Length: 515
Image (cartoon, rainbow, N blue to C red; front, side, top):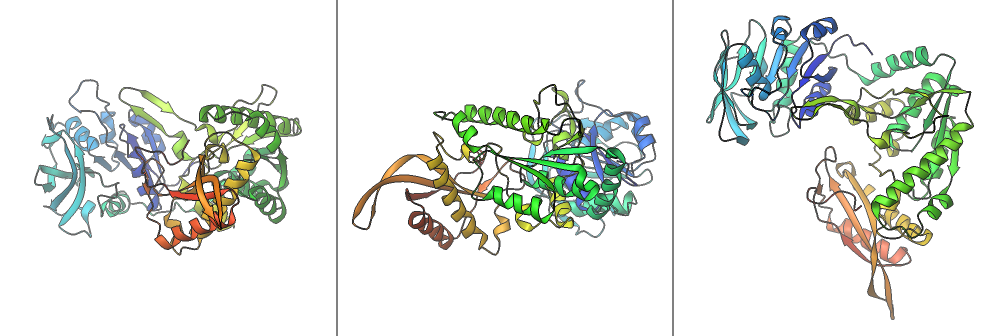
């Protein structure tokens, strides 16, 4: 989709390049992450309002380090180099970069030494986050230093005439508290953006584009009930109404009454053509005696494809498009100095592996969006908060939260325990601060006493974490009274459980899910 204004982010392999994009999007300015070696001629055609060169793990002086097209600097488009991007700018324009022997990593205090639009409205002394080995030793002609730190005389530089800037630190990370304002200054004061990237406008433009693409054809969507597929369903339904057909596969491993909630919302309230495949018995039969987590995942994945394909054949000849909840992080094309370009589509975002007789054209209406933007679209479309703010849920469902064998009895125990975990945490006024929370059924039993009787029953572990994106996570410090309520309710109300434990491990080294 064409955008009236956008900023190009050239990716040099930094692990936080996506954060640059998210910070720019938060300024209501559209941006895209593109290849590091994108030719200047291509960028000139697409006319971005600004260009950002990201950080990266390589050393600019090395012969095999990724470089940009030098003609970028002659396009008369504002440029901001971040860390590696600053060093690359300096070297490309005739400056010198000193190859460091020791990295500067962590928080640093930076002093603004000359006025600059990039620091407009900020204090003269700022906390920033450094993560670099090399340093700019000699500035290119026409540049001046505008900030310094104790270890970095050129913490930032500018050629205000050509509107080319460089910062040695990372403004995109939370450890640079005023970094978002710096990026906002670049977008608005330097690039002249007006900030027209709004989800209401996205919805309006997408509805027009979907109608133009689909025409009188029909679209099939595998609805999971998660945020992404739910928002896709709501958006497509608003665009093409009865031409949308959704298939929801109940694998018997969902949370308590989840299938009924999905039927009520999408089938009854929205009036979407929804086919529900209740195949819990089939999935359970295929999982009999299987305790290995990887085998569980493969069996569930294959069975899902078989069930979905069977239902999809009922639409053969009627449906041309298959809709998917692919998001922007899943399709970003990034370049690693050693790995080359890679475009990744996460397997749980698409119905891959369909038989040859079921080949559809893809339609991915959310492929430009980050997760927080998807949630905003969902709110604009009128989806309830329990859908929009829903936590991540694993594709194999409760199968990876039941350690060991999967049986109907163990599923029922976990569903009831998990329900009570969610109910108690949802009572917290700040429950949205908890990124994910759930119960896990362990493959052990322990001795307990209930009344005058000795018991030998199941152990449930409770997991709650705080995170921004799931890549890293800290265990959440739930109040003792909340933990107390959870434990009391599970032990007293869930038959078959006599002990509750709280998981206090972080990721890394642990994972969020147990399997």
